[in-house]
Length: 263
Image 1 (cartoon, one colour):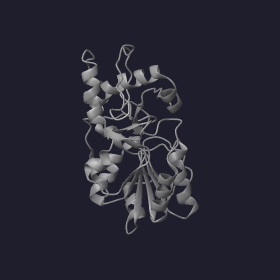
Image 2 (cartoon, helix red, strand yellow; image 1 turned 180 degrees about the vertical axis):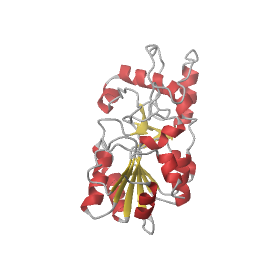
Image 3 (spheres, helix red, strand yellow; image 1 turned 135 degrees about the horizontal axis):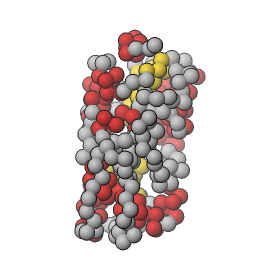
């Protein structure tokens, strides 16, 4: 049975890279999508968001309440350990907690939930500023989705029932449609960003996957690339992943305690 000592032996003396997933943020109160205790999820797809104003109304109604908890999440021991180790990170998360923990080299593969982009003019603005505009436009919408609750999701979305009268605000510059600056399900990661991620991996001497089941190809391709090019692959995740059979090392363990033990 692999141990933390085995992981330490694998990365010691090597330039290693971390690929992080939603499991690294569960100790910050943000649930993951596919872990053993993950709640059922029905996330908004890109085509649904762009194709129907009512879908956008529903999204922003629940996002406004979810943000009241999501926006207050803080880094946990796993984030802080990676920052202290000075490890470059490719993250599938959109929560920005690696940067808040002090990591300098972070590639946000799926974007950042603390930014908003206009689909018409391309302007990027602060999600916190949008929160204030949404709350001003909807003064009667009370409540919050508590951190750790099943209704809160790792993309800042949340499940709420009363959204039909919610007022959606538009881009202040052009009046266009606003969208979180994240990659929705059904949307592709920008090719230049993928190319940069592979360049980071090619410069590494080991890859450690932390808190990802690698269910979607956006993460699995890096694990497969590492093995194909002789880069040792270690996985730290609670539950199975799609790369367990090819990994050099798999620890079925939490990321906070495991990464902290590497300090």
